[in-house]
Length: 544
Image 1 (cartoon, rainbow, N blue to C red):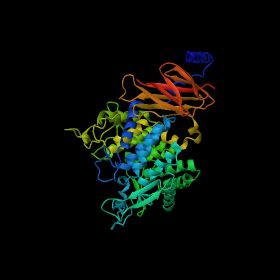
Image 2: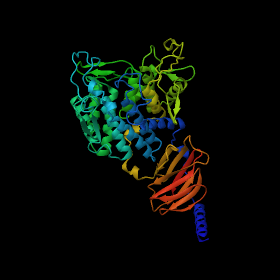
Image 3: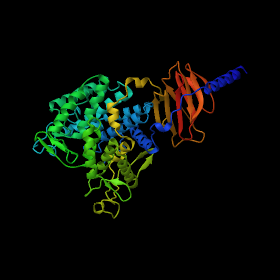
Image 4: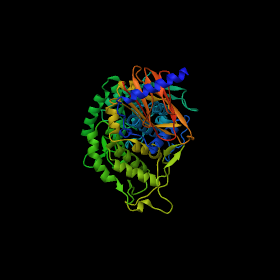
């Protein structure tokens, strides 16, 4: 009887307090939310990340070895960038899932399978050095010199991780260690020990030694697109450490970029690559090249890319009679799929949503979007034509091919679908300050039984806003639980579920609750247990 009286009194207190003027509830539509397709891409990335080490299922390629664009390093990196953008723009108050998956991707970047190609590639190739008559001895260490097509991505990945999660995981000595110990060859176990700081200095030194015109990918060849990644990594590293690597490198790089005409402003196209020993810039108009360079250069040199984009769109993209859009080929080429994947991602970054939606509609119509374990991707298809068809002979506005390469189907289309206008630009130029990590946040979500489609702390409204969705395996009557951290102990917070006040937290204790939502304080965090039959909106808002 005494307990019932106390509960009744608390409920009356809650009702009386509610009669006073309450802070206006945030409108959920004011905050971005991931839709099911976007969540599907993110789930597919998580599925691949969670495969055992050296299990590269669904990441294979028609290309031999790890030299081409479907190489593991590019898939891992582009998937990481996709995760980063989703976390930054849609769920900044829910980080633990993205951090875990990103760490799996970075750990996979350090696997021998991903970087061991360099031992042979470092010896040289006549393709990138026409005067080559004898291969060099080469070397094993994949980041000490050249190979920016690997080390640049690693730099961007670990620098972004440090900023998004306020983590020193990859800044500790030896955190980035490459182990060379293959069975049946070599002189025994060799280790090449790096960390984020040592990697940053190694790359800065290479920029300096190369006159700041860029670091080589394969020996003797400098590509614009690959050099964007270390530059972005420097900018984020500087933000965290107070260094000036970006200032040093970017200014001198832009000077070389202009002097050597790495961008043809009349056509909007970037150079294909520069041969160092021959001092020769090669030019070819490729949508994949312009898209890749454009996406990432836009994050730090936006005017150059925004001026080029309309020229590129006019040159490459062809609207189809059915309202979709594609970059068709004149003759079958593996570049086709990468052309479309990278260009769609560029369109997203510069904010051309009409082009993005039209290109995704083409992919949805012709590239067999597939759901596996709640993950969405476009599976590899090596065929350029359906039976009896000849895409090269088709009208450009009625073009159809099932060809999909792994990088495009696993990562680039998800990147295009998830990114927002100035997505990378915003993340790189306005990273979360340290104070972000003292704001209220969502934790302990039972992924994948529940997904978080939005999670934002609105500081002016003093409100944590979140939306949860059930996974496909949710059963009738299913519930889920999660926790909210960083709620000031001296504050009074109302908890709202789907627009209904379900309880209050005061002085670090639940003082009232009602309805089917269960509230408790566990280890100093607010625990929320609620029914999850469909999308559920949750607001935790401070009253005083």
